Image (cartoon, rainbow, N blue to C red):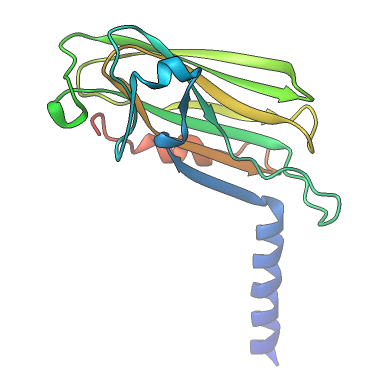
Length: 189
């Protein structure tokens, strides 16, 4: 009898633990990003490394972010949203021309609801040739749990790109899944 009670207790504990933080983390390749207009798309390369700016000018890209939204039908309330993006600077001919100097990458995460911008946050990072870096945007509470959408736009200097997008939808306002995933990121792709 004690064995059954112990097993029941363990199962009950695991169910409670899993319901405390219903989280859905997605990992999407940077090749899901797009140039901001068709003319600039001609200057981009979509490769196994992600999207790369092959132009001589700085160009903007837009990256869609996957988010599991609130559902009244299932009772899920995943209103907290975190994301990460991994930009890189080409350091070898593996992604075309190599950069020979440091470059600055600027990324902006935005939330929209009903086509109206609700908020945005800008992050800038300096990358040496061949380096990559993780940028995270943590635990934004969706303005509208059912209708809010998120994206990241990045201004990419020549011979830079984005390899990966990470997203986390959760009930936990202090989730660290994205920062934990980026913590072990090597400095070069």
